[in-house]
Length: 134
Image (spheres, rainbow, N blue to C red):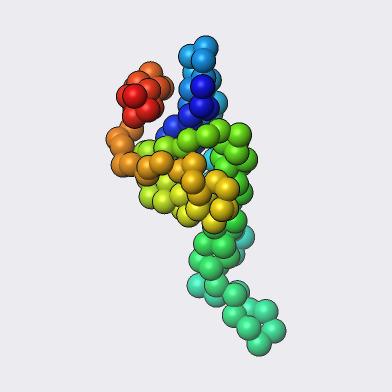
């Protein structure tokens, strides 16, 4: 049997559902993306560093981008072994993961669909993935 996976993801967590001969495996990957972090001196609009100005907002944005990339790579590494992948969930993060998967020529063929879905319970996610692959 082909190994088929469905990944429901948002900024907080990813639920990786892998279908196999014996049923399914479910793995939860926490994101560790900090949605709100305060820095020392955040009240100031700019910090001075020589002749350059550093913007606290830019620093926050870069940190969130770095954390997001690490999160997507952890999800990607968890599904390298499957034959088919479907991405679904409420966040636009699934499109970034799809772009990462498509960047690998071997993995790009495995991506079957990217679908928008509401917030679901784990049982609803498993049922959704089973229905998709039938």
